[in-house]
Image (cartoon, rainbow, N blue to C red; front, side, top):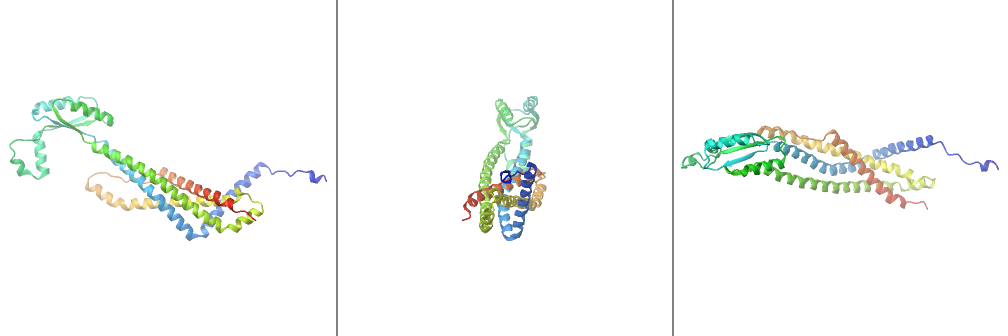
Length: 319
């Protein structure tokens, strides 16, 4: 028959794309409805994901605050020059004037032996003992402020130049402790990276196990769908979107946990700032940090569900 030789026409490309996008939208809504219909499982899964992600997120913000505080300390770098005891005050003040004209020096401050002794008497509480001394054991001191553009390398070069002066007995860079702090911070940053990777794997396992249980619960539905000719991609989509929802909701819960935690400590931090007469502002998630957190948690949800579906869906075949 002539009709049997007529080939079936494929639908237009625009219709196929529309059907493809429509099924994605249906899968997105269907997966959300499935999550909504199982509130207990959803709440437990999302809470576990949120708590898991909040730990590296909290460490990240902690290091971000430490970086900001240590950056303020770096801006107050000072070099203290303790002069030879034989140097007279007139010669010491002349040395201060000379140092002020050197490159990479913003300002200098001279502290005489008498001023040093008086400050030590007031701050130490050993006033009577100090009065019994036959001579002043403290040297003249010159405090040098490097320029704002001076980095650590420049400050250390300036320190070496000042230490080489014959009048200088000891030259000390007052932020040497800060360099040690930066080393500790670098170790902490690498530790946070390791912790983040481990917790990311934990999130993959949590979402993968949740999707695996969902696949088992819908075993008969999947078999029937395959019998009527549905492809694996068609069956896979609702599960993938389910993982996306779990990951995104877990990221939002993680953000809320970290924000509430930092709000809880903002009060004591403000009181501590007043006690030390400093301006310490607590840094929380920026909008960019929030977007990155949600994007990462969503991608983890998609990856976890993909692994679970790829492993278990192929094992379900109608007999």
